[in-house]
Image (cartoon, rainbow, N blue to C red):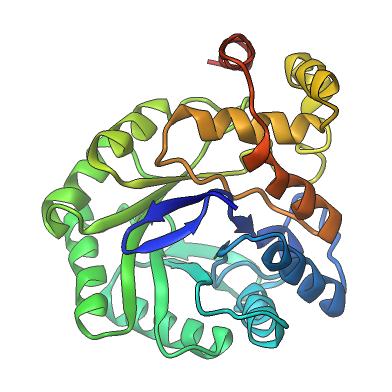
Length: 294
């Protein structure tokens, strides 16, 4: 498995987005044993970065559902988990009746971290990411709250998600050079508008984690080759899936890019992991870049 840098960690060039096992567009979830097996299949394939979040759960009153799957899978895996890095997120509140709001206050974030630590079964969260901005608060103040959690030893590295260029620049200013480990934004052939954020991350050596890199849950990933025929055509020429071509193309965009394809079945993440070995020509990469939506 090829590796890339994520803040202080060296991780696999492709990670696992664990969300679909607890939350997705069609509300179809694997049973607990199959979900654990999917995470462990990722580990077997050489994947050492797993992304989760406290809100990834089938219902509002099962917060931490996905974190518990990930934590158990890593603890019970037959291999050595010493190099496995888990990233979680906080800042979104789910309430009774599936109400949602955002809270970037220090008290809430500290409480959320403590619950995530319990769900994951760890003493410190490797990468803790601000899930979505709390527009009622000054962005830099919330970043300072994350820095406080880091100073308290609850988290190792800080990331942000769903951030624009200005917000990334604010985080860099607050945390100092090298203080921001990652930015996790949507990016795929279907969603290309985070290119400016990707470029800024490349300029500063910040890991860029595309979420829904294959087009999203509930059929987006499986239909990527039908929606964007170029990826299917190149995949057929190489004898691989269109999904592998998409991931190989994304990896080629910058050495800071670490796609985190989601999976509900072991076969899905095993196929995605093979993208690191797919060598595309300059012409094929140019064809990939030319397709998709602006």
